Image (cartoon, rainbow, N blue to C red; front, side):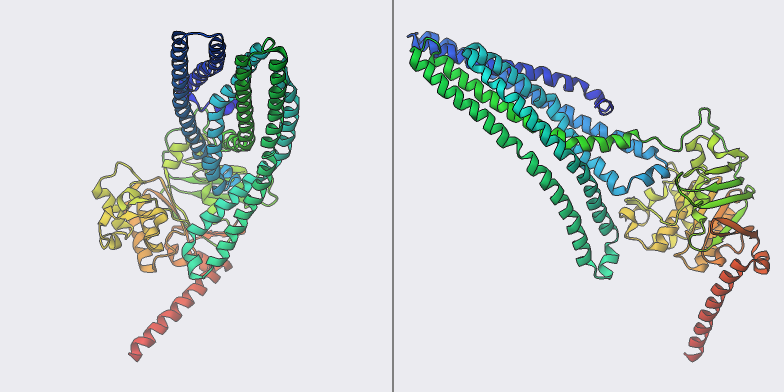
Length: 589
């Protein structure tokens, strides 16, 4: 509660005013039955119409006052709870933005979505009940009991007998249901993950006609949630009959004992006005206890949600800025000094082992290796997406951990294997590299990335809308747009992580030539599966199982390195075969 209360902030005033208005509402509600009892007694004593009208005026004023306080409480409660939820979403989202990749690896994307939506919605409902209903119900209970005792004397003490019974019952229900709720929310994560995966891969699902399989998978996840929460709700539902039995038992007692007192004492011990008011207070006590039961259910349900949200808020990023960070990067030189790396501290195997490497500023470096050779892991250490487990990574002669994170990452542009475009126009996506870039600058980098070839063919050119994830452009087009975005940044270091795999070799060569001319002083690291993408690099690094197997030019590696030789000749024989088939077809034609 202490951690979550920090998200109230500017909505603290309505949050405080809500209980104040609730107190006013409850006071008038508690006094109204007492005034009615006085009216009944005066009518019984034979009062005139002027007395009745005076009571009527008082009751109307008190009812309107209670209504006004209730309305104000509802308004301030809605404003406070909705504002609190907005701030809490803001805090959780901003905390996620600060996470390192290691932190994000701890939470699935579906789990974070659930926490930002369902869990915060549950917390909002609980907060709304806490500042209004949780104040109203016990206060109304106390006021009603006090007035019932004042009007009915010792008869009202019967209400105290049900409190231990209800307390034991509610405690037992809570102990049983909390573990069920705790195990249920991960099922929500699995459901969201199933939906997210299906929507992202809907083209693959349809092309393989796997709709039935995906439907069954969703049904299984949904059924798991239904079973757990049905079981929990079935237990929580015991609250209502338990309340009903206790309270209506008390009501029967009040009716039978009160009626007997009125008849046997001829209204001396208890008159009609007191008795009717006592019944009214009994109903108010019943209503308050039912409200308390609802509060209990909601807080029990949302307690696990609060824990899950606090888990995100409490997560500290594994990568932080130093106390006095360096805010300027002089050049694009890179050094790996005996660097080893693993994704988690408790992992048994190292992903990278004893990497020693010096890259001069402005140099073009190719990286090649088989699947799982840790090519992407190596380059992710440069902008501190992860920190090295052992050794030191340096940029411009300084440990990357000494730089301001924003300065470091702003100096490094990465085009990752999984290219991501965002919903918006083509120009807006390109300007991720530089939000202040002119139209001419945007068009220039698109020409360098050979993206202008297809952008000019689009219906609205650079104002063409890109769907979320870039689903309305091809893989090669998406790659070229992402390369243009990186070039617009004009970084000290440019990393292309297999980012031209979906374009033809001619376009690949044009892009590399344009980069060499446009950003000659930028250090360029090109990860590729095909040797033609790196053969004109200043040096090529061959990685094998997280270790550097060899470093050299394409000619040197062809002469001495078995891994490079196998890759090169297998690809070039295939290209030669394809070229031969093409020539044969031309001759035949």
